Length: 256
Image (tube, rainbow, N blue to C red; front, side, top):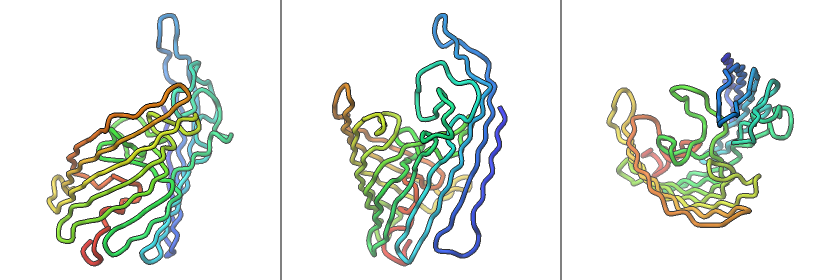
């Protein structure tokens, strides 16, 4: 595997700061069996991703924009299996409409006692087991796509403690269980709490979190409501519950 990655971000003072990251990956894997009498014949192949974004802030208001273009396999041998996820390894589709992946288009505002954000957002929590935005650097392998939702989110912080509370409602665009472009209709409600203390462990602030989600989903085959799920999380890293990391700044002005 050959992996090339280049990133750039504008440094000049501006309310709107653009950024770009280009990733090019060449892969030549060995053939290996996936079922009796069937082998995965894939590669060599070249896939690309150009991630464009911009973040802006005007006073207490902000905007976040991000999307991928030329995302997917550019040329080479494709999988001889049906499409399994959004990586698009079953077709050379990087230069088609499939290679355009909107990720963020949201606006937010910080009020004196709470923070609100609405629009298309990526979704992440804790170690990425229930929600993963595909942005964290993995210990091995690579990151692709990520959970995307249309979200209305409220967050607040206790006045004299580093304890944050989050309430959010999502219309799922794409995640591990559903994809809107496959006619899946998934909605979820989220309640979460995060403690972000001043204790430092191995150079990172200590964080403790609880995340609960109730979800309903309808597909062309069936409809159902999932059992409410709760996840507890302890970590020594930055807060990763939402794409803008804004919950660590909300609360009474002057106390964040």
